[in-house]
Amino acid sequence: MYSERLTYKLLEISDLEELHELNLIPEVDQFNTMGLPDSIQVTKDLLDAKIEDHQQENISKLTYSIRLTDNSEFIGISGILFGQPKYKKAELWMKFNPKFWNQGYATETITRLLKACFEEYQLHRVEAGCAIENHASKKVLEKCGFVVEGVQRKNLPLKTGWSDNYEFGILEEEYLDKNRD
Image 1 (cartoon, one colour):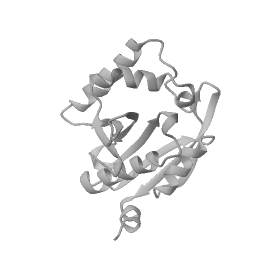
Image 2 (cartoon, helix red, strand yellow; image 1 turned 30 degrees about the horizontal axis):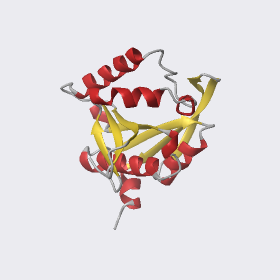
Image 3 (cartoon, helix red, strand yellow; image 1 turned 60 degrees about the vertical axis):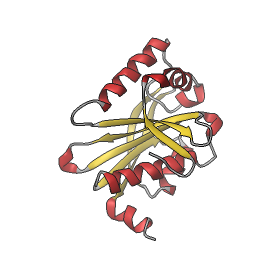
Image 4 (cartoon, helix red, strand yellow; image 1 turned 180 degrees about the vertical axis):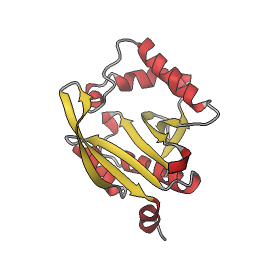
């Protein structure tokens, strides 16, 4: 899968070292509930689980490595978590190396994943969330057409304590209206 400047490929074992390095960056961990991995084995176990998700008959989770198209440099990961088929919805998430923040890559990624959700997977609704202190992610989601639908109080167990979480949603018709040529 591609966008203007980025290539998205399902995670594979060859992504282990870069994924581990990403997970060790304190700024990346700030709004992440996973915490810093104790060892590369912890990251490998997480990666193995994500790879196994991709091999299931009824795929419910897709996790992509994100690379710059021009030089294949690893910049982060993002994913789609599908809900029960009856509801035709999914949740998007992302995690980027800080050296690639503020360059439009998160917006480009979420835009591309929304296109997959609505045009390829024919979903009705896509959701996302972020800690209320995560102003950059909130801005990205709003720029991509998501609407804040509520706040879950003390929902995220961050290393700084429990954080409130913005709940975002975008409907198929909103996406189509925003992307009409």
